[in-house]
Image (cartoon, rainbow, N blue to C red; front, side, top):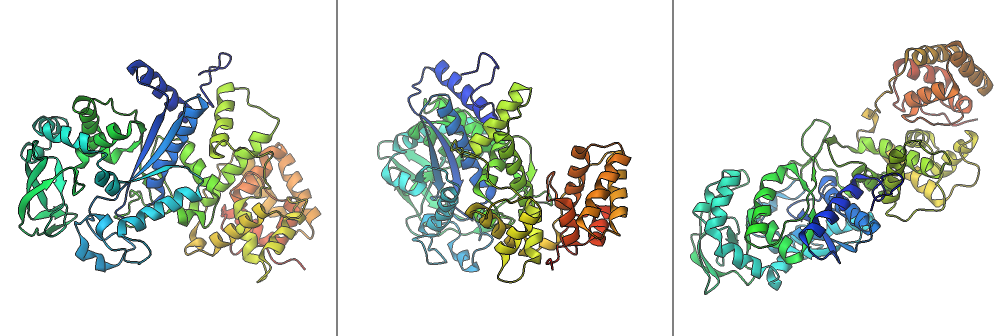
Length: 546
C-alpha cells in the first residue's frame, strides 16, 4: 500500500491515510473487504448547504482512495427524511408552521415541485451531488424504514433498551432514556413525531406503547393530541432516536466509514457503543471534521439561515473548486463565503499548472500529496493538459469594463493583448468569463476584498517606487521600464517583484503583461491601488481601449 522508495501511501493525501487505516482495521477485525461501503447521512429538514454536502464529497474521496488501494467501494447518501420538522427553516414560507413535528416526508412541498418537503430538500441534495460529478447510491430514510431493512436492528435496540438507557447516561449524562424507549412512533391520530413518548416495548407483539404529549420542539412547545396507543415497530410508522439510529444503519447497510462533525460527537460515541455491543457490528471508521463558519464566525447552518448552497457556489465557480475546498484538508475550522470563490478558483489553477509542469518538488511526500490532491479533485479523470488560466479577479474586473453584449469577445481580446491567450477562447474559458462576470455583479460584490499579501521590506519599497514612477507613464513600455527599474533598485528578482504587484492588484501570484494592463486601467488608478494595498476592482476597472 505504501511505496517502498518514498513511503507514500496511495496518492499521499489524508484521504489515502484514512483508507489505509480503514483497511488495516478491517483486516484486524477479520471482516471481508470485498466491498467497503462509506456513508454520508444528510439532514432533510432544510436546504442542503456547502458544509452538509461536503460530508458526502469527502466520503466519496475516501471511496476513491480505497479504490486506489485496490478495494471496491460504494458511497451511500442517506437522507434523514423520516425526521420531523422542528422549525420553519430559512428560505421557506411561514405556512410550514402548521407542519412542525410531522416527518418531512409527509409534509407537502410548499413549492409544489416535489411530492413532499423531504423530497424537495432531498432533490436539492441529489442535484448538488450530480452537479459535482459525485456518483452515489441514494437511500431515503422513510423508504428504508418502510421496507423493513432496519427491523432486525430496531428489535435488538428495543429489547436492550434498559441497557442502552444506562449507557446513554454513562456516556453522555442524559437520563431521559432510563425512563423512555429510544424509539419515536408517529402518532396515528395527529401524525406528529416528536410529541410522542414510547414508555414500553412488547417483544412478542413487536409494539411500543406510547402517548402523544406536549414536547419542546426547536425553541417552542408543541402540544400533542393526547392520544395513547400502540405502534408496531416493523411497519415504518416510527423511527429510532438519533442516539441509536446511526448504529442501526451502520449494521444494516454494513457501513465501514462515516465522517462526522464535532456537533454530533456525543451521538456518534453512543452509537459506536450500541453498534458494537448491542448489534454486534463493529462501528465504522470515523474521521471528525470542523464545521464551516460564516465570516462572523457563526456555524453555517440551515436553521440559522446563513447557508451557502452548492448551487450558490456553482453560479460563480467550477465543480473542481468545490472538490478542492473539501479535499485539501479535513482538520481545522474554516470560514466560507462566495467572496472566497476567486481564492479557490486560482488555487485550482495553480495546482493544475503545477501538476503538468516538468518541475518537481525535491520532497517526495509533498510532491505526491500535491499530485494526489489534483487527481482526487479531478475524480481521477485527469485531462491531457491544463486549461487556459487567468486570475479570476482579473476576469471579474475586465467583465465590468466590457461593453454591453460583448462580454466574452471584449475579455478575450484583452487577455490576448496581455499575452495570456494565444488562440480563440474555448468553451471552458468562456464559461469562466461568465462566472466571473456574475460574481462581479452579485449583491455585496463591491465590498469583497482579497487578503493583502505580506511583503518583505524590499518588496514594499519596490512596489512603492513602481507606483510613484508609473503616474507619468505614457505607454506600456514606460510601465515595463518602471517595473524593472524598481526591482533592480531594491535588489529583487522578477520572481519576487511581479507576484507582489499581481497579489496587490488581482489577488494572484500571476497576471497579465503589466504594461498593457496598467495602461488599460489607468496609471493613476493602478498607482493609487498599489499605494493603499486595495485589490477592489472599482474605481480602477480597465477602460475600454481606444
